[in-house]
Length: 109
Ligand code: HEC
Image 1 (tube, rainbow, N blue to C red):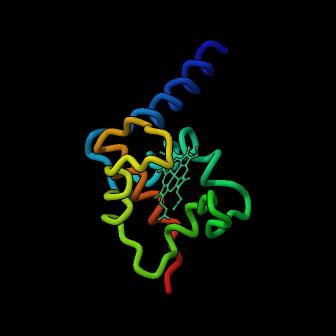
Image 2: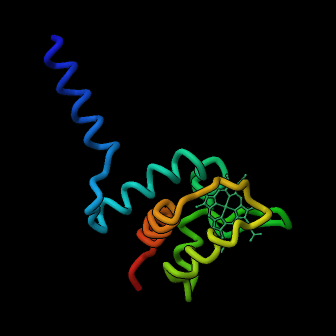
Image 3: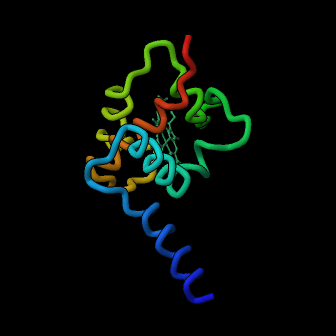
């Protein structure tokens, strides 16, 4: 029983600590975890589309699928620490992971 618990813990830890040589896939997974922890309440609600109303918040799917959206565009937005969002004190790595995750929601056209 102890062994099983230890095994499960080891797997959980392996998932949390992404190795430095993270592949693009890992980057997206890391961004997704961050987004779920930090941004979901505002940006990942069921069926959330483009922003509506003066204080509307767009869902990440809508952000990713803007016609001219790019990874750099999202990175630039996050680096600017926009006043309408809480300051999450993101590191460079976190910003790129979040942008990679958001862009992974882009549908191929
Ligand atoms: C308290 C709510 C809130 C949280 C939490 C939040 N945001 Fe935002 N976000 C906003 C608002 C409000 C806007 C601005 C919408 C506007 O006026 O264009 C915005 C806009 C954005 C945009 C630009 C969308 C566009 O119009 O191009 C991105 C990208 C974004 N947020 C990413 C994030 C990420 C990544 C996180 C988590 C680290 C996050 N947000 C957390 C409220 C929030």
